[in-house]
Length: 199
Image (cartoon, rainbow, N blue to C red):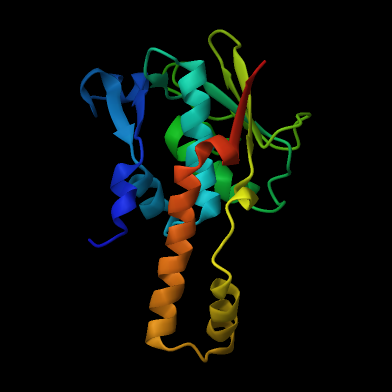
């Protein structure tokens, strides 16, 4: 499996999943999500998928400063509706990591471990996404702004060629390299693209 080398340099998200422990999937219910994991699930790597991973990574560091984040114990809220922009794409990535879903998720086992009704859209917030621990009510607002990391100016020209069907194999290769270079630079500039505020 071939993919950009920088995927391997991105910090993993460590979780503890009580349901996973009970069902014998992972010892102590402990496992990790990597950026490569979410890229495989999404089918691509882009500023939106990267942003979903970044906001989750940074929020969980604040909510669980000295321990693994507890999967299934995290409520997620978006200011946008599910149909707006890329909220659905971001929601899918965050759901994969946190377990939170709207109404479609796991209904629970003997009254425990439910994952549904933990993700909400059209929320009354002023950030990209809000994460809240269900057990203690601690919340963080996270704002993501990838526009601070500009794409290579040549990408627009190549995108037009791709759209018109005139792109050569070299054009496609070059476009993909430039696209992933921007994603890489987004990860390299977290202090610029993401802001986390404790509530």
